[in-house]
Length: 565
Image: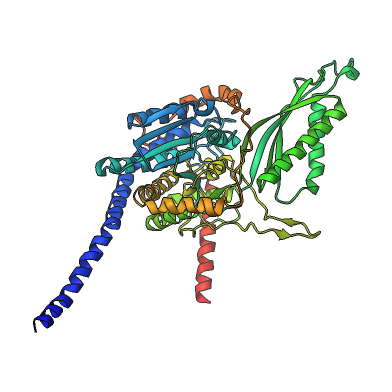
């Protein structure tokens, strides 16, 4: 009877014991979820700071390698927050690394800061209206990423201090990304050798993340310099050896060769020096090329073809040539386990609630720029981005080619050196051309401000995952070693002799900086940059308002028709 009583007591106690064990097992995750909720609340509480950083960088409008005001503003801000700043990394005056904390893991958080030539645009205005005619502007949206990162990192830093969470946070800027001019140097010079993972942020039109090969091309950026002999272009032209002729012949040769290059290549050029004046045979001239392809061997091969074109042009004109590599990037490959962790947090955050004014500005801008669709801002999350198929496609003639690629980003050189992801956040308007004044329309408006805050929430949550769930970093490195780099090893496209081209864009910024300075944002006086510029949000022409109204009515009628069917 005693044994039966003990057995009965044990059976009754078992659920209590199991419940107690499950509660105990759940505690670590409960703690992380609680800290995540606190981080999200902290980001929301600091949304004014995010807006101010965003609007400040927008107002500076600085081209690559000349981000002087952005450098001073961001490093001063981070020094006040207790970060240790290493300035001028890789010999680049506007590059820096800010670190806080101690020990492992070391998590790097980065975003680009440079802007686009001739893209000056008043924010919130749905048609071309430059702040300064001809000046640079944030027609790529690089003014927003540092705002997102700083607010997210500061929220996590506060929790690390209180909870005594070990680890180091590292903030850094992508200087001169539009020139793909710096990140390969950061890697070459060892600034990421001890980093355990990197979260990079880039403006987009949805809140999302991808993993694997996302279809980007890598590239080599190179300038070909030709030197000939000057002469009087009318009096003694036979004594001249035209460097400009060499440039033009190289370009003609390249354009004829395009027909016989693989479909995956993208290549383009500008004549950066065409001589001085027509009556002097140009003794010097230069052409600047981007050679883009989908794999390291193909990038190298395409560049070597360009060198052959330059050799031929020099032979035809009896000139000499040299070349300078100005930048490089590998094709991007991002990390699956970290992307999966980020996407789970993205689903919890969701998309911002857009106002009627936000959607009005978006639709008017889409109509103005003849976007493929006039749907306004995204209201549904994208699924997690999957790898672009790298399986060769057999073309007519039996040639096996990888799928076609497009743009490039030198975050790739970091992604091939350690586990890296790219978080995209909804601060821009879908369907715009890219690298264009129109892409600056939203970048100092409530659209950008909301997108930054929602991106910062997802990033802060993921930083806590990386700090408190060591299994994620373990899986991330396993993916990096056993899958990503199993058959492909990173080889830099720059050598030890190359130096960052820090002189680029200096002349342009020397001209426009004095014109832009009167328009620098003053947050002590104005709540937003829109207020400082006196812009009513949103600003549309009457014909735009009418066109948007018709588009909305058309869309509503289509939905009604489909429901009735």
